[in-house]
Length: 318
Image 1 (cartoon, one colour):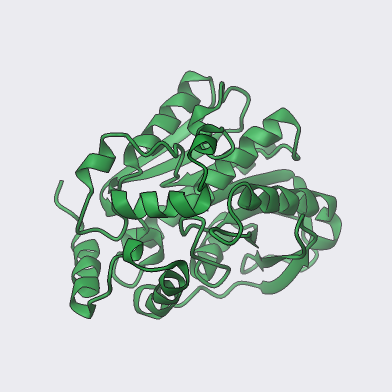
Image 2 (tube, rainbow, N blue to C red):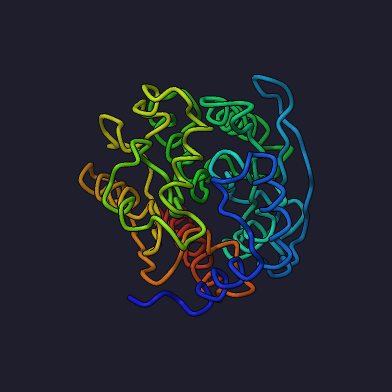
């Protein structure tokens, strides 16, 4: 499958600008480089009815959140809610890096999206991101009334590292260590820290996320190799996924994470979980935050949002 022309233009642009690979930078340099690229790659965010920056208590201090309410919704309406965990390899990314996708998801699903600015490595290695994500989920449920959300219609989602955290929260909800959620939206998720699947051998250069870059992220997030096999780091290694909520799983063809994302979708199906699996064969990792060049970004985000909205509509009908 030839790579999408827009994705190829992004790769060409990065090469023309002389931006070094992420794994050759230190975390601070990588964060700065990522922040500089946002205005180049991302379109303007859609208008929503409300945007509010919040904080909630966390295990190491306040956690920053950002709440979006879909355009056209009533101020007093209790909306379904998607708790969104941003991507960035557990090292880069923040509320601003995923502001545009969160706005689109809120509008397309006609819901409230609450984005979480969890702690990241290497300053705060695993399981800090899991702990913060869990704390945010608990707080959202406890404060459903003031937040004007419907706690019976709650989903978790995220891209890449955020997809990893969302999958972990879904398992934790099944096990009762956090409130149970009704849906999981996993967008090119990282699910296995072993980093040994065949895709790691195929995608070694020429892409934004290569096998070496992914191992750089993993090393900063879970520096103790023996802990990478714990299911809260590698949800694909959970003994069972049975009883976790219905899922939307998306993978990209030019991505070292493609094999583990596909394997996660298969595990969900084998364990009796309803799953919608979308494979975008001509796309690169992180294309969802490159909408200025890649029209498929908005299309796939809308597909994910509509899948979630359809699930909520089914729940209402029952």
